[in-house]
Amino acid sequence: MKNPKRKVDILVISDVHLGTYGCRAKELLHYLKSVKPGKVILNGDIVDVWQFSKRFWPNSHMKVVKHILSWISKGIPVYYITGNHDEMMRKFAGTRFGSMQIVNQLVLTLPEGKQAWFFHGDVFDITMKHARWLVRAGAIGYDALIMLNSLMNYISERVLRRGRISLSKRIKQSVKHAVSYLNQFETSAAEMGIMNGYDYIICGHIHQPQQKKMIVDNQEITYLNSGDWIEHCSALEYKNGEWQVYLFSASDREAMHAGNDIDTLPQNSALYLSLIKEFKIKSV
Image 1 (cartoon, helix red, strand yellow):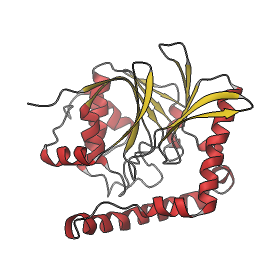
Image 2: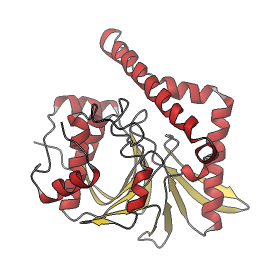
Image 3: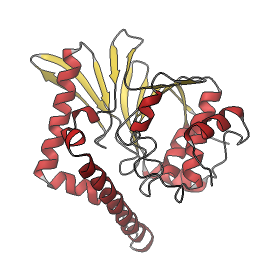
Image 4: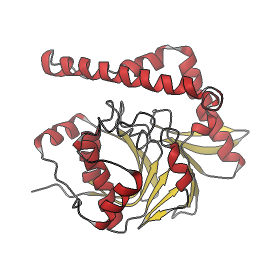
């Protein structure tokens, strides 16, 4: 007997980077199948348009898209917030496909009356504005590092029987400049949220899942980051008036290997075909 799906009022995921070698699509699909969301926020960089190639679009990546489409077909509100790796979507801001809407940012009033501001977070990245070629080169290098990391983890788990390791995470934690950047990002987000009178500010972009209260100029705000589905396999869940960070666990991995993925939306459905045609996604 299958485990019942967990009900979640709001689900937030970001930085999936579908179309890249580092994307953990199988883990994400397993997670998506385990929850029953009332509302879904896709907070940027879901599809990595920068590195998108028709030569690499695995079936597992397509299954993630199809599962999200199955939610849309059921009328579940889905907001696709544009990021920097899928910035070409920004020209579609305001467009609706069934219950999905493409936006650049989003403000929601939560049931308890507090306001939450959602946006990807690349607005804080000065490098993005002044050296885009450097950022793109860094993205390619990051993907190569993730590929190397995947090989190391395969050896570590299957051959040496040890746990997973993260090269990029260790680099971020050991390089002072990287730590400073993360802290500056969070502070800038908190300052902007307080300036606009929000209670929560919810970002992605830096691949660092986080939930904490921050005080700026004697004013408090809750900063949340949904992390990513490359290294951390994380999401944000809002239920019964509370936020929490979800992290894909070892037990989730065991359950994933024990089960079989099934398609959740027929490939001949009208919604599926219209979106595939609109964004020129090729299923393999």
